[in-house]
Image (cartoon, rainbow, N blue to C red):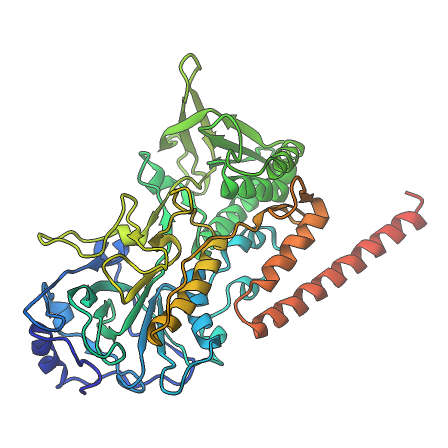
Length: 527
């Protein structure tokens, strides 16, 4: 029991006495995942998690304050080797979290120093988000871009828990004396009632689409950021396609935002619907992809124009309403009131069957339940943890933050974007710096290397602008192939890369054979 809840003092000791009469979670089988219970649908569960401060009671780390009744009844996770080896808890299984865990597994560790790693995520599948658009086009299967964590981690010692974070109780800000391996740095409480005491913590909780900025967006607009979002959008499109079958009325889709996500959605959906649909893309700027390389922007403009995507530039959405004149549930339509960004331009009102929202995001670290006492994690205005150049949270030497959870700046002092490319690179550095911190070596400063930008423009179309060749943009089928190869290389594990590579080659062979047969048939028929 001593290794389940070991080195917190004061009120934590009182909690430990309550744990002793409870059966602790036994070690899961190697590489498996545990789902302790179904997640709550309460408002608190939807908000994410909160951070609770720790009060110093003199010496060591101090006691944990504000322990709720549900937390006092939590069961402690029994680490396989107790506190004999470092205990690393990673919150979030996106690019930052999962790839940090895999990086830790790949490093060479001195005997007795290889950490025990727990990865926590609310979903059972990892989502390779840049390829979610291919789910809508039918180009990929779900297992290829959203494998289960249990499969990805089956050949590792990383333990996966499907759960949501309820609260954090960091205590590393209260003092760092003593053995850095055996001293606890805090506790994580999960909604299932599981308590995880850690020596090192990685915050990689990601972000979600910010819908609550316009009246009606939460109720009537669909985001496109997660695997669940992709399924919802696909199901809605299938419903609309079935309803419009044999009907002359086109399917009308409005996409709010013309950044990468909005443009990729517009290109994919317009290609899917063809003449059966009308896609309208709304953007407050006077151009699409204002921050993209010129080559990508020009390629996107050509594709959207060829697919008759209507660009409503220089407008922002004032509100979204449900059209009350449509009585049937299967015929729901929505009204968007558009306000011009400049004076002297008339407002617009459009009516659509589906609204997709791609503007804005909010880090889940921002979803904190405020308390009367100060929160010790330093957060910026967006709710991201302020970190130093080694990705350690300021004032917390045992906590690292990556991806959307971190406020990392470039050499000019600008925040890095929350892209997959940034998270990839941060995960590599976070894994290495954890190794260095555990082994008493110097930590490396993170330096982002922009390798270029890629975007999907349909089933056989894409645009790639590499940063190492000025003025070069690969587009069309060549860009599409290059993009898929680049992402194939970045898939999480060698085993998964091999399976997906074989699957894609097989699909390509089948499609090429079908195209050849179609060409021969047309030639023989004299067409």
